Amino acid sequence: MRIMGIDPGLTRCGIGIIDVDSTRKISLVFVDVARSDTEIATHMRIKIIADRIDELLELYNPDVVAVERVFAHDNLQSVTTTMQVMGVAMLSAARADKPMAVHTPSEVKAAVSGSGTAGKAQIQHMVQRILGMKKVLRPADAADAVAVAICHGWRGDGLQGARPDGSVNVSLSGKVRARQPLTPAQQQWASAQAAARRRGAVDPRRQQARKKKA
Image 1 (cartoon, rainbow, N blue to C red):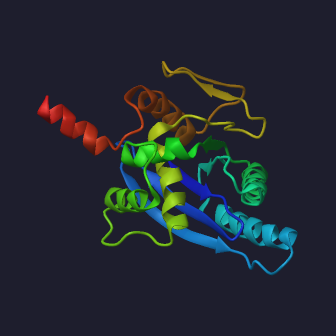
Image 2 (cartoon, one colour):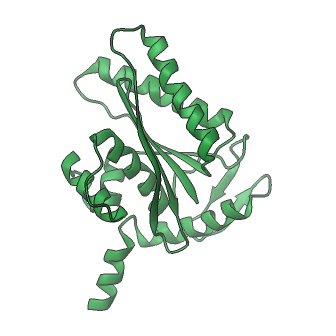
Image 3 (cartoon, rainbow, N blue to C red):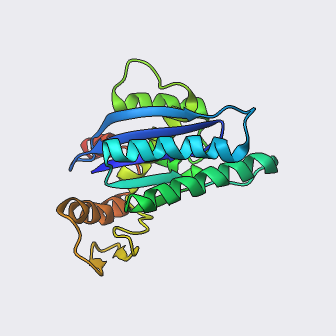
């Protein structure tokens, strides 16, 4: 399964693309940070981000798009612009007829580090470890986008539509319901989704280590 993770932001929008195999091993395909100039009009800045997402969707053809959900904080302006970019990412996924999932920041942090309150530096180092890289991904927006994709690859929940009509549901027991047939890749992913939800969103290597100790 190929997953595009997006960490929405107007000045810097992280975009990370990974492949996840049947053992939930993660391979980095592409990472980038789409940037926009703070001195140009907001709607033109949004267009720059949207154009880059559209370009990468066409180029890498992910099976699903995962976006980090905007969370509230004291800076209302920052929340507003981030939500605008989140909407653009959702629209890009819809136009490309891609299923989409949304994950909260705490879900993403817990997936890659085991703690929903992990800091940015910790997330960067955990993403480095998961990918087997010699250096951490910089800037943090790039690592965050990859973390969103990893979260979806391991959690597998939150899927909002495997078809343009958004009609797919996967139960915790692994039963798949869809109005239209899923592709083989989507079917395989959906089956792995229920198993991942039962196991929990953690690094599978840590699960294997716990089994050895037991």
